[in-house]
Length: 519
Picture 1 (spheres, rainbow, N blue to C red):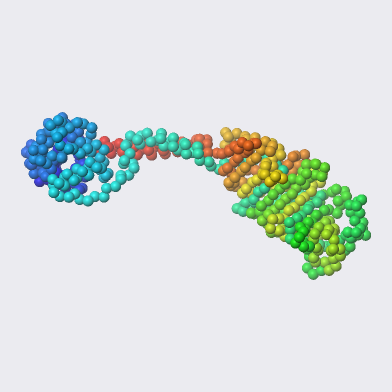
Picture 2: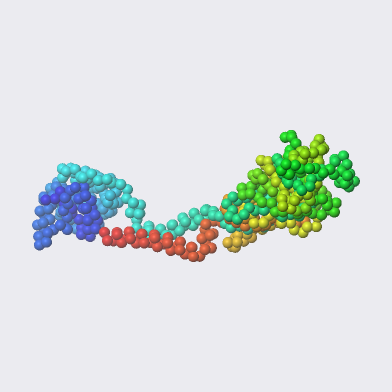
Protein backbone atom coordinates (compact mmCIF):
# COMPACT_ATOMS: atom_id res chain seq x y z
CA UNK A 1 0.00 0.00 0.00
CA UNK A 2 1.50 3.33 -1.11
CA UNK A 3 0.59 6.91 -0.41
CA UNK A 4 0.98 8.00 -4.03
CA UNK A 5 0.32 6.21 -7.32
CA UNK A 6 1.92 7.76 -10.45
CA UNK A 7 0.42 7.19 -13.91
CA UNK A 8 2.67 8.20 -16.83
CA UNK A 9 3.97 7.29 -20.26
CA UNK A 10 7.10 5.18 -20.36
CA UNK A 11 8.66 7.77 -22.65
CA UNK A 12 8.60 10.21 -19.73
CA UNK A 13 10.40 7.78 -17.43
CA UNK A 14 13.54 10.02 -16.81
CA UNK A 15 11.36 12.93 -15.68
CA UNK A 16 9.10 10.74 -13.55
CA UNK A 17 12.12 9.10 -11.90
CA UNK A 18 13.30 12.48 -10.60
CA UNK A 19 9.74 13.51 -9.68
CA UNK A 20 9.11 10.31 -7.69
CA UNK A 21 12.37 10.69 -5.78
CA UNK A 22 11.41 14.23 -4.76
CA UNK A 23 8.02 13.02 -3.45
CA UNK A 24 9.75 10.27 -1.48
CA UNK A 25 12.13 12.87 -0.09
CA UNK A 26 9.07 14.60 1.38
CA UNK A 27 8.30 11.47 3.42
CA UNK A 28 5.60 9.76 1.30
CA UNK A 29 5.68 6.30 -0.21
CA UNK A 30 5.41 6.31 -4.00
CA UNK A 31 4.47 3.54 -6.42
CA UNK A 32 4.99 3.56 -10.18
CA UNK A 33 5.30 0.68 -12.63
CA UNK A 34 9.03 0.31 -12.06
CA UNK A 35 8.03 -1.30 -8.76
CA UNK A 36 6.10 -4.25 -10.31
CA UNK A 37 7.53 -7.42 -8.71
CA UNK A 38 9.08 -10.03 -10.98
CA UNK A 39 6.49 -12.53 -12.26
CA UNK A 40 3.56 -10.37 -11.16
CA UNK A 41 0.55 -9.76 -13.41
CA UNK A 42 0.88 -6.29 -14.90
CA UNK A 43 -2.85 -5.51 -14.88
CA UNK A 44 -3.47 -7.03 -11.49
CA UNK A 45 -0.61 -5.20 -9.78
CA UNK A 46 -1.59 -1.82 -11.26
CA UNK A 47 -5.25 -2.27 -10.26
CA UNK A 48 -4.21 -3.28 -6.74
CA UNK A 49 -1.82 -0.35 -6.26
CA UNK A 50 -4.22 2.19 -7.72
CA UNK A 51 -7.04 0.96 -5.45
CA UNK A 52 -4.94 1.05 -2.26
CA UNK A 53 -3.09 4.34 -2.94
CA UNK A 54 -4.33 7.47 -1.17
CA UNK A 55 -3.91 9.60 -4.29
CA UNK A 56 -3.07 9.09 -7.95
CA UNK A 57 -0.95 11.63 -9.84
CA UNK A 58 -1.46 11.50 -13.63
CA UNK A 59 1.43 12.95 -15.63
CA UNK A 60 0.06 14.50 -18.82
CA UNK A 61 2.53 15.07 -21.68
CA UNK A 62 2.70 14.81 -25.44
CA UNK A 63 3.40 11.11 -25.00
CA UNK A 64 0.79 10.31 -22.34
CA UNK A 65 -2.24 12.10 -23.84
CA UNK A 66 -2.45 9.39 -26.52
CA UNK A 67 -1.78 6.50 -24.14
CA UNK A 68 -4.83 4.31 -23.51
CA UNK A 69 -3.22 2.99 -20.31
CA UNK A 70 -2.74 6.47 -18.89
CA UNK A 71 -6.29 7.50 -19.82
CA UNK A 72 -7.71 4.30 -18.25
CA UNK A 73 -5.74 4.85 -15.04
CA UNK A 74 -6.81 8.50 -14.96
CA UNK A 75 -10.46 7.53 -15.40
CA UNK A 76 -10.25 5.00 -12.56
CA UNK A 77 -8.52 7.51 -10.28
CA UNK A 78 -11.19 10.09 -11.02
CA UNK A 79 -13.92 7.59 -10.10
CA UNK A 80 -12.14 6.91 -6.80
CA UNK A 81 -11.85 10.67 -6.09
CA UNK A 82 -8.06 10.54 -5.87
CA UNK A 83 -7.21 12.08 -9.25
CA UNK A 84 -4.41 14.74 -9.23
CA UNK A 85 -3.49 15.77 -12.80
CA UNK A 86 -0.19 17.56 -13.65
CA UNK A 87 1.15 18.74 -17.00
CA UNK A 88 4.88 18.73 -17.80
CA UNK A 89 4.83 20.29 -21.29
CA UNK A 90 2.57 22.33 -23.54
CA UNK A 91 0.29 19.47 -24.63
CA UNK A 92 -3.50 19.62 -24.27
CA UNK A 93 -5.16 17.33 -21.72
CA UNK A 94 -7.69 14.92 -23.30
CA UNK A 95 -11.25 16.28 -23.39
CA UNK A 96 -12.65 13.80 -20.94
CA UNK A 97 -10.27 14.98 -18.22
CA UNK A 98 -10.41 18.75 -18.53
CA UNK A 99 -13.08 19.27 -15.85
CA UNK A 100 -10.51 19.06 -13.05
CA UNK A 101 -7.91 21.68 -12.19
CA UNK A 102 -4.37 20.62 -13.02
CA UNK A 103 -0.95 21.88 -11.83
CA UNK A 104 1.59 22.92 -14.45
CA UNK A 105 5.13 21.69 -13.78
CA UNK A 106 6.47 22.69 -17.19
CA UNK A 107 9.48 24.55 -15.81
CA UNK A 108 9.79 22.67 -12.52
CA UNK A 109 13.30 21.70 -11.40
CA UNK A 110 14.19 19.51 -8.41
CA UNK A 111 15.07 21.56 -5.33
CA UNK A 112 13.73 24.83 -6.75
CA UNK A 113 10.87 26.80 -5.27
CA UNK A 114 7.95 26.32 -7.70
CA UNK A 115 4.31 27.45 -7.13
CA UNK A 116 2.74 24.52 -9.03
CA UNK A 117 4.77 21.95 -7.13
CA UNK A 118 4.01 23.67 -3.80
CA UNK A 119 0.25 23.48 -4.52
CA UNK A 120 0.58 19.84 -5.53
CA UNK A 121 2.17 19.07 -2.17
CA UNK A 122 -0.85 20.61 -0.44
CA UNK A 123 -3.26 18.51 -2.57
CA UNK A 124 -1.31 15.34 -1.75
CA UNK A 125 -1.37 16.20 1.95
CA UNK A 126 -5.15 16.65 1.76
CA UNK A 127 -5.69 13.16 0.27
CA UNK A 128 -2.92 11.30 2.11
CA UNK A 129 -3.76 13.06 5.37
CA UNK A 130 -0.07 13.20 6.19
CA UNK A 131 1.98 16.40 5.97
CA UNK A 132 5.12 16.34 3.83
CA UNK A 133 8.52 16.27 5.45
CA UNK A 134 9.94 19.77 5.68
CA UNK A 135 12.78 20.42 3.21
CA UNK A 136 15.08 23.40 2.82
CA UNK A 137 14.50 24.67 -0.70
CA UNK A 138 16.92 27.18 -2.08
CA UNK A 139 18.20 28.39 -5.37
CA UNK A 140 20.19 25.92 -7.38
CA UNK A 141 23.73 26.81 -8.37
CA UNK A 142 23.88 29.04 -11.40
CA UNK A 143 25.45 26.33 -13.54
CA UNK A 144 22.39 24.15 -12.95
CA UNK A 145 19.90 26.92 -13.65
CA UNK A 146 21.47 27.79 -16.98
CA UNK A 147 20.31 25.72 -19.92
CA UNK A 148 23.10 23.41 -21.16
CA UNK A 149 22.98 24.82 -24.69
CA UNK A 150 24.07 28.18 -23.34
CA UNK A 151 27.40 26.67 -22.35
CA UNK A 152 28.05 25.78 -25.97
CA UNK A 153 27.72 29.44 -27.01
CA UNK A 154 29.32 30.77 -23.84
CA UNK A 155 32.88 30.95 -25.25
CA UNK A 156 31.77 33.53 -27.82
CA UNK A 157 29.87 35.62 -25.29
CA UNK A 158 32.68 35.34 -22.77
CA UNK A 159 35.28 36.27 -25.38
CA UNK A 160 33.27 39.38 -26.32
CA UNK A 161 32.99 40.45 -22.67
CA UNK A 162 36.69 39.83 -22.07
CA UNK A 163 37.69 41.80 -25.18
CA UNK A 164 35.61 44.80 -24.07
CA UNK A 165 37.13 44.59 -20.59
CA UNK A 166 40.67 44.35 -21.96
CA UNK A 167 40.03 47.37 -24.20
CA UNK A 168 39.08 49.45 -21.16
CA UNK A 169 41.89 48.18 -18.90
CA UNK A 170 45.00 50.37 -19.05
CA UNK A 171 48.25 48.73 -18.01
CA UNK A 172 51.72 50.21 -17.44
CA UNK A 173 53.91 50.39 -20.52
CA UNK A 174 57.62 50.89 -20.92
CA UNK A 175 58.12 54.29 -22.51
CA UNK A 176 61.28 56.01 -23.76
CA UNK A 177 61.34 59.81 -23.84
CA UNK A 178 63.80 62.03 -25.70
CA UNK A 179 63.11 65.77 -25.42
CA UNK A 180 64.49 69.25 -24.78
CA UNK A 181 63.22 71.40 -21.92
CA UNK A 182 64.24 74.48 -19.97
CA UNK A 183 62.86 73.10 -16.71
CA UNK A 184 62.71 69.61 -15.13
CA UNK A 185 61.29 68.65 -11.77
CA UNK A 186 61.57 65.14 -10.31
CA UNK A 187 61.70 63.12 -7.08
CA UNK A 188 64.56 60.68 -6.58
CA UNK A 189 63.32 57.11 -6.08
CA UNK A 190 63.81 55.86 -2.52
CA UNK A 191 63.78 52.20 -3.67
CA UNK A 192 66.93 52.42 -5.75
CA UNK A 193 69.31 49.50 -5.27
CA UNK A 194 72.59 51.23 -6.19
CA UNK A 195 74.42 54.21 -4.69
CA UNK A 196 73.01 57.72 -4.55
CA UNK A 197 72.75 59.55 -7.90
CA UNK A 198 75.19 62.39 -8.43
CA UNK A 199 75.03 65.86 -9.92
CA UNK A 200 78.02 66.54 -12.12
CA UNK A 201 81.00 66.66 -12.02
CA UNK A 202 81.01 70.14 -13.56
CA UNK A 203 83.60 72.60 -14.80
CA UNK A 204 82.21 76.04 -13.88
CA UNK A 205 83.17 79.69 -13.68
CA UNK A 206 81.18 80.18 -10.47
CA UNK A 207 78.58 78.59 -8.21
CA UNK A 208 76.08 80.70 -6.28
CA UNK A 209 74.62 79.06 -3.16
CA UNK A 210 71.34 80.17 -1.55
CA UNK A 211 68.70 78.77 0.82
CA UNK A 212 71.14 77.52 3.42
CA UNK A 213 71.52 77.98 7.17
CA UNK A 214 75.28 77.48 7.42
CA UNK A 215 78.33 76.65 5.28
CA UNK A 216 81.20 74.92 7.06
CA UNK A 217 84.73 74.40 5.72
CA UNK A 218 88.21 73.71 7.07
CA UNK A 219 90.62 76.16 5.39
CA UNK A 220 94.35 75.78 5.12
CA UNK A 221 94.61 79.53 4.59
CA UNK A 222 91.89 82.15 4.83
CA UNK A 223 91.96 85.83 3.80
CA UNK A 224 89.39 88.59 3.66
CA UNK A 225 89.44 91.63 1.38
CA UNK A 226 89.00 95.17 2.63
CA UNK A 227 85.73 96.30 0.94
CA UNK A 228 86.94 99.90 0.82
CA UNK A 229 89.76 98.95 -1.61
CA UNK A 230 87.52 97.35 -4.22
CA UNK A 231 88.49 98.50 -7.75
CA UNK A 232 85.52 98.88 -10.08
CA UNK A 233 87.71 99.03 -13.21
CA UNK A 234 89.16 95.58 -12.69
CA UNK A 235 86.25 94.14 -10.66
CA UNK A 236 88.84 92.90 -8.17
CA UNK A 237 90.92 93.84 -5.14
CA UNK A 238 94.58 94.93 -5.13
CA UNK A 239 97.08 92.72 -3.27
CA UNK A 240 97.18 95.18 -0.40
CA UNK A 241 93.45 94.69 0.28
CA UNK A 242 93.78 91.09 1.49
CA UNK A 243 94.03 90.51 5.23
CA UNK A 244 94.94 87.05 6.59
CA UNK A 245 92.63 85.46 9.15
CA UNK A 246 93.69 82.96 11.77
CA UNK A 247 91.39 80.02 12.40
CA UNK A 248 91.60 78.71 15.95
CA UNK A 249 90.09 75.84 17.88
CA UNK A 250 88.83 73.12 15.56
CA UNK A 251 90.28 75.05 12.60
CA UNK A 252 86.80 75.17 11.07
CA UNK A 253 85.16 78.26 9.71
CA UNK A 254 81.43 78.81 9.22
CA UNK A 255 79.46 81.26 7.13
CA UNK A 256 75.96 81.71 8.57
CA UNK A 257 73.07 84.14 8.16
CA UNK A 258 73.73 87.47 9.78
CA UNK A 259 70.06 87.91 10.72
CA UNK A 260 66.70 86.32 9.92
CA UNK A 261 65.43 89.22 7.81
CA UNK A 262 67.82 88.66 4.88
CA UNK A 263 68.63 85.58 2.89
CA UNK A 264 72.35 84.74 2.83
CA UNK A 265 74.09 84.12 -0.47
CA UNK A 266 77.60 82.88 -1.22
CA UNK A 267 79.18 82.83 -4.67
CA UNK A 268 82.17 80.54 -5.20
CA UNK A 269 84.67 81.56 -7.89
CA UNK A 270 88.14 80.54 -8.94
CA UNK A 271 91.03 82.84 -8.13
CA UNK A 272 91.88 83.24 -11.83
CA UNK A 273 88.54 84.81 -12.79
CA UNK A 274 90.07 87.46 -15.05
CA UNK A 275 91.23 84.79 -17.46
CA UNK A 276 87.68 83.37 -17.53
CA UNK A 277 88.97 79.93 -16.67
CA UNK A 278 86.88 77.34 -14.95
CA UNK A 279 87.35 75.45 -11.74
CA UNK A 280 86.26 71.87 -11.09
CA UNK A 281 83.25 70.99 -8.94
CA UNK A 282 83.26 67.31 -8.07
CA UNK A 283 80.12 65.21 -8.35
CA UNK A 284 77.60 65.93 -5.61
CA UNK A 285 75.45 63.14 -4.11
CA UNK A 286 71.67 63.57 -4.12
CA UNK A 287 69.78 61.63 -1.44
CA UNK A 288 66.84 59.31 -2.21
CA UNK A 289 63.52 61.08 -1.74
CA UNK A 290 64.99 64.50 -2.58
CA UNK A 291 62.84 66.82 -4.71
CA UNK A 292 65.09 68.21 -7.45
CA UNK A 293 64.33 71.09 -9.81
CA UNK A 294 66.63 72.00 -12.71
CA UNK A 295 66.16 75.17 -14.72
CA UNK A 296 68.37 76.72 -17.38
CA UNK A 297 69.49 80.35 -17.19
CA UNK A 298 70.04 82.68 -20.08
CA UNK A 299 73.18 84.76 -20.33
CA UNK A 300 73.27 88.47 -19.65
CA UNK A 301 73.30 89.17 -23.38
CA UNK A 302 70.49 86.73 -24.16
CA UNK A 303 72.78 83.76 -24.76
CA UNK A 304 71.40 80.31 -24.18
CA UNK A 305 72.38 77.95 -21.40
CA UNK A 306 74.98 80.13 -19.69
CA UNK A 307 74.00 78.63 -16.37
CA UNK A 308 71.73 76.35 -14.44
CA UNK A 309 69.64 76.67 -11.29
CA UNK A 310 69.48 73.52 -9.16
CA UNK A 311 67.06 73.34 -6.24
CA UNK A 312 67.32 70.32 -3.93
CA UNK A 313 64.51 70.13 -1.39
CA UNK A 314 64.28 67.42 1.25
CA UNK A 315 68.04 66.97 1.73
CA UNK A 316 69.56 68.32 4.95
CA UNK A 317 73.23 68.32 3.94
CA UNK A 318 75.03 68.89 0.65
CA UNK A 319 78.78 68.37 0.22
CA UNK A 320 80.61 70.49 -2.37
CA UNK A 321 84.11 69.32 -3.27
CA UNK A 322 86.68 71.56 -4.96
CA UNK A 323 90.27 71.02 -6.09
CA UNK A 324 91.51 74.60 -6.54
CA UNK A 325 91.86 77.70 -4.36
CA UNK A 326 88.57 79.61 -4.16
CA UNK A 327 87.14 83.04 -3.79
CA UNK A 328 83.99 83.28 -1.65
CA UNK A 329 81.77 86.34 -2.13
CA UNK A 330 79.42 86.25 0.86
CA UNK A 331 76.33 88.48 1.16
CA UNK A 332 74.31 88.95 4.36
CA UNK A 333 76.48 86.48 6.23
CA UNK A 334 78.86 86.51 9.15
CA UNK A 335 82.05 84.48 9.50
CA UNK A 336 82.29 82.42 12.67
CA UNK A 337 85.53 80.77 13.77
CA UNK A 338 88.52 83.10 13.18
CA UNK A 339 89.75 85.02 16.20
CA UNK A 340 90.03 88.31 14.33
CA UNK A 341 87.26 88.97 11.81
CA UNK A 342 87.29 92.58 10.65
CA UNK A 343 84.78 94.31 8.36
CA UNK A 344 81.75 92.41 9.77
CA UNK A 345 79.69 95.59 9.50
CA UNK A 346 79.65 95.20 5.69
CA UNK A 347 76.77 93.27 4.04
CA UNK A 348 79.10 91.72 1.47
CA UNK A 349 82.63 90.42 2.02
CA UNK A 350 85.04 88.55 -0.23
CA UNK A 351 87.25 85.73 1.09
CA UNK A 352 90.16 83.85 -0.43
CA UNK A 353 90.26 80.24 0.68
CA UNK A 354 92.77 77.48 0.12
CA UNK A 355 91.41 74.12 1.17
CA UNK A 356 93.71 71.26 2.19
CA UNK A 357 93.78 68.30 -0.17
CA UNK A 358 92.70 65.91 2.55
CA UNK A 359 89.43 67.82 3.12
CA UNK A 360 88.84 69.96 0.05
CA UNK A 361 85.13 70.55 0.52
CA UNK A 362 82.36 72.75 1.88
CA UNK A 363 79.44 71.33 3.88
CA UNK A 364 76.16 73.14 3.26
CA UNK A 365 73.35 72.82 5.79
CA UNK A 366 70.17 73.35 3.84
CA UNK A 367 67.06 75.23 4.84
CA UNK A 368 63.62 73.58 4.62
CA UNK A 369 63.20 74.38 0.91
CA UNK A 370 66.83 74.37 -0.21
CA UNK A 371 69.61 74.57 -0.98
CA UNK A 372 69.66 76.31 -4.35
CA UNK A 373 72.84 76.01 -6.43
CA UNK A 374 73.38 78.19 -9.48
CA UNK A 375 76.48 77.12 -11.44
CA UNK A 376 77.63 79.34 -14.32
CA UNK A 377 79.48 77.58 -17.11
CA UNK A 378 82.42 78.85 -19.12
CA UNK A 379 81.87 79.71 -22.76
CA UNK A 380 83.05 77.20 -25.34
CA UNK A 381 82.01 73.99 -23.60
CA UNK A 382 80.34 71.73 -26.13
CA UNK A 383 78.39 69.33 -23.92
CA UNK A 384 77.89 69.40 -20.15
CA UNK A 385 76.62 66.22 -18.50
CA UNK A 386 74.45 67.15 -15.53
CA UNK A 387 72.90 63.85 -14.39
CA UNK A 388 73.24 60.23 -15.50
CA UNK A 389 71.34 57.13 -14.36
CA UNK A 390 69.03 58.66 -11.78
CA UNK A 391 65.90 56.67 -10.74
CA UNK A 392 62.81 58.86 -10.26
CA UNK A 393 59.21 58.46 -9.14
CA UNK A 394 57.79 61.66 -10.67
CA UNK A 395 58.61 63.87 -13.65
CA UNK A 396 57.31 67.35 -14.45
CA UNK A 397 58.08 69.46 -17.52
CA UNK A 398 56.10 72.62 -16.73
CA UNK A 399 56.92 76.13 -15.59
CA UNK A 400 54.93 78.91 -13.98
CA UNK A 401 54.23 82.09 -15.91
CA UNK A 402 53.98 85.51 -14.29
CA UNK A 403 50.18 85.11 -14.34
CA UNK A 404 50.51 81.99 -12.17
CA UNK A 405 49.42 79.57 -14.89
CA UNK A 406 51.40 76.37 -15.44
CA UNK A 407 52.58 75.99 -19.03
CA UNK A 408 54.87 73.66 -20.92
CA UNK A 409 58.62 74.07 -20.42
CA UNK A 410 59.56 72.17 -23.62
CA UNK A 411 61.79 74.24 -25.87
CA UNK A 412 62.45 71.84 -28.73
CA UNK A 413 61.09 68.87 -30.58
CA UNK A 414 61.37 65.35 -29.19
CA UNK A 415 60.00 61.83 -29.44
CA UNK A 416 58.28 59.25 -27.28
CA UNK A 417 58.40 55.53 -28.13
CA UNK A 418 57.28 52.20 -26.65
CA UNK A 419 60.25 49.81 -27.02
CA UNK A 420 58.27 46.70 -26.06
CA UNK A 421 55.39 47.52 -28.41
CA UNK A 422 56.82 48.99 -31.62
CA UNK A 423 53.40 48.75 -33.30
CA UNK A 424 52.36 51.80 -31.27
CA UNK A 425 54.85 53.79 -33.33
CA UNK A 426 56.76 56.97 -32.48
CA UNK A 427 54.88 59.87 -30.92
CA UNK A 428 56.38 63.23 -31.94
CA UNK A 429 56.66 65.88 -29.23
CA UNK A 430 56.44 69.49 -30.38
CA UNK A 431 57.90 72.61 -28.87
CA UNK A 432 55.68 74.01 -26.08
CA UNK A 433 53.59 70.82 -26.09
CA UNK A 434 52.58 69.67 -22.62
CA UNK A 435 53.56 66.14 -21.65
CA UNK A 436 52.58 64.22 -18.53
CA UNK A 437 54.04 60.94 -17.29
CA UNK A 438 52.30 59.58 -14.19
CA UNK A 439 52.38 56.46 -11.99
CA UNK A 440 56.02 55.75 -12.81
CA UNK A 441 57.67 52.47 -11.92
CA UNK A 442 61.36 51.58 -12.34
CA UNK A 443 61.72 54.82 -14.26
CA UNK A 444 65.24 56.13 -14.84
CA UNK A 445 66.60 59.34 -16.29
CA UNK A 446 69.41 57.99 -18.44
CA UNK A 447 70.96 61.40 -19.08
CA UNK A 448 70.42 65.12 -18.62
CA UNK A 449 72.92 67.18 -20.59
CA UNK A 450 73.37 70.75 -21.70
CA UNK A 451 74.91 72.10 -24.88
CA UNK A 452 75.77 75.69 -25.65
CA UNK A 453 73.76 75.83 -28.89
CA UNK A 454 70.72 73.90 -27.65
CA UNK A 455 67.54 75.62 -26.54
CA UNK A 456 67.44 73.79 -23.23
CA UNK A 457 68.43 70.63 -21.39
CA UNK A 458 68.45 67.40 -23.36
CA UNK A 459 66.76 64.57 -21.43
CA UNK A 460 66.64 60.85 -22.20
CA UNK A 461 64.48 58.74 -19.85
CA UNK A 462 63.18 55.19 -19.85
CA UNK A 463 60.81 53.20 -17.64
CA UNK A 464 57.27 52.08 -16.88
CA UNK A 465 54.40 54.59 -16.92
CA UNK A 466 50.67 53.94 -16.62
CA UNK A 467 49.34 57.39 -17.52
CA UNK A 468 50.88 59.12 -20.57
CA UNK A 469 49.37 62.36 -21.83
CA UNK A 470 50.27 65.06 -24.29
CA UNK A 471 48.51 68.33 -24.94
CA UNK A 472 48.93 70.55 -27.98
CA UNK A 473 47.10 73.85 -27.52
CA UNK A 474 43.83 72.91 -25.80
CA UNK A 475 43.50 69.34 -27.06
CA UNK A 476 44.59 66.69 -24.53
CA UNK A 477 45.55 63.29 -25.91
CA UNK A 478 45.97 60.17 -23.80
CA UNK A 479 48.46 57.57 -24.99
CA UNK A 480 47.88 54.29 -23.20
CA UNK A 481 48.56 50.63 -23.54
CA UNK A 482 45.51 48.46 -23.00
CA UNK A 483 45.55 44.87 -21.84
CA UNK A 484 44.12 43.96 -25.25
CA UNK A 485 47.19 45.46 -26.98
CA UNK A 486 49.49 43.46 -24.74
CA UNK A 487 47.53 40.24 -25.27
CA UNK A 488 47.05 40.77 -28.99
CA UNK A 489 50.75 41.18 -29.61
CA UNK A 490 51.76 38.24 -27.45
CA UNK A 491 50.78 35.27 -29.57
CA UNK A 492 51.58 32.58 -27.04
CA UNK A 493 49.64 34.25 -24.27
CA UNK A 494 46.64 34.81 -26.56
CA UNK A 495 46.56 31.16 -27.66
CA UNK A 496 46.77 29.86 -24.09
CA UNK A 497 44.03 32.24 -22.98
CA UNK A 498 41.73 31.17 -25.83
CA UNK A 499 42.29 27.47 -25.21
CA UNK A 500 41.60 27.75 -21.50
CA UNK A 501 38.40 29.73 -22.05
CA UNK A 502 37.05 27.45 -24.79
CA UNK A 503 37.94 24.16 -23.10
CA UNK A 504 36.49 25.18 -19.74
CA UNK A 505 33.14 26.39 -21.04
CA UNK A 506 32.75 23.61 -23.63
CA UNK A 507 33.57 20.95 -21.03
CA UNK A 508 31.03 22.38 -18.61
CA UNK A 509 28.36 22.49 -21.31
CA UNK A 510 29.12 18.94 -22.48
CA UNK A 511 28.85 17.65 -18.92
CA UNK A 512 25.46 19.31 -18.45
CA UNK A 513 24.19 17.91 -21.74
CA UNK A 514 25.41 14.44 -20.78
CA UNK A 515 23.58 14.70 -17.47
CA UNK A 516 20.41 15.78 -19.27
CA UNK A 517 20.49 12.87 -21.73
CA UNK A 518 21.37 10.40 -18.99
CA UNK A 519 18.38 11.54 -16.97
